[in-house]
Image (cartoon, rainbow, N blue to C red; front, top):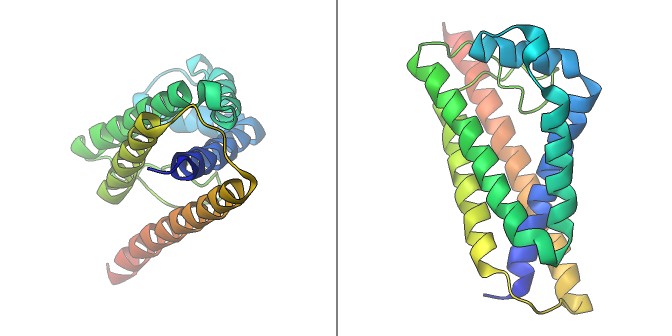
Length: 174
């Protein structure tokens, strides 16, 4: 597989985790309460700052080829943990809980679609981690990687909107 494909996937996850960290750093109280509602702990005991810093470290690691494979593995682990957390709450009948994926302003709640999205993204990260080579990208390939990453970002945002719309329409039918 061409190197630009794994680079594009890494750039996509760098964007995704940068946005995620940004939300947590801007609204730590919201995420502290969100995790408290998910795991019924004291609000002060949930480490939002360390999680945001971990996400930022992952972002930086994704940008450098030498650390990219390990960062992609961490991406997969975090996405699987998020999916497991959502899945556990769904099994407990708590589908009303906010997801927090798109920040505090979003009304999206946890759902099977979000669990599947995270599982698919984790698989994509694992795939890219296996495809990294020691070669460097040529200028043209780097440009193609950036365009492919932008396409993945748009695809992700479209999926987020479709999931949100489906939830909204399901509530209107009730």
